[in-house]
Image 1 (tube, helix red, strand yellow):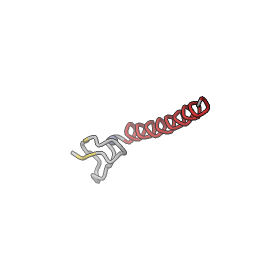
Image 2 (spheres, helix red, strand yellow):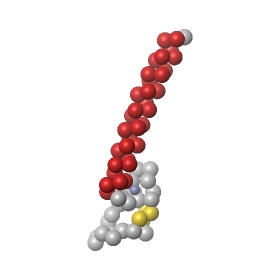
Image 3 (cartoon, rainbow, N blue to C red):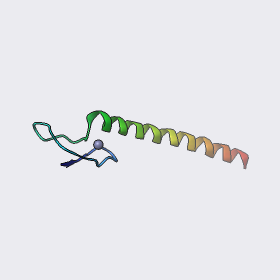
Length: 59
Ligand SMILES: [Zn+2]
């Protein structure tokens, strides 16, 4: 068993590759999860800025 090296993942997986150098639990799912997380973070920051601008314009 190995621990996934993906960002914010840490899943345990069985390394069945020949070299045993696999770093991610799944190249497809783990990679896409990381991308979705990054996208959501950018989106949250975008909305945070808009809300802050709205509040400052009201005061
Ligand atoms: Zn992973």
